[in-house]
Amino acid sequence: MCIAKPLCFHFRRGTHRGLEHVGFFIGDELAKFKETHKNMLTGEKKLSHDAPAFVAFENGKTAKFYSKPLREIVKLQGWSFEKL
Image (cartoon, rainbow, N blue to C red; front, side, top):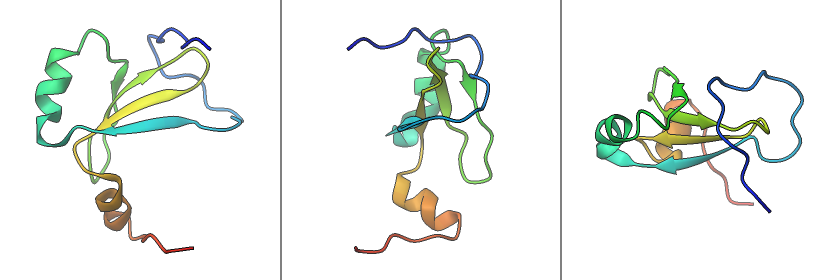
């Protein structure tokens, strides 16, 4: 299995099968991370709760880098996790 090369822009939205993106929690060091890796990042998404940096790959998948953990982001969006 090989990883697709990054794109210079985010892949056109369409019907994806399976995993669309994977998120990494960087924490308070996100600004430093963005500056250090700015030449490798495809962009940054401005959200009300965070501003994750991302790398988009030619297969339509994306790696996103967040300053907040998933549980906090879900809570800020008004959702919650429930035990199954």
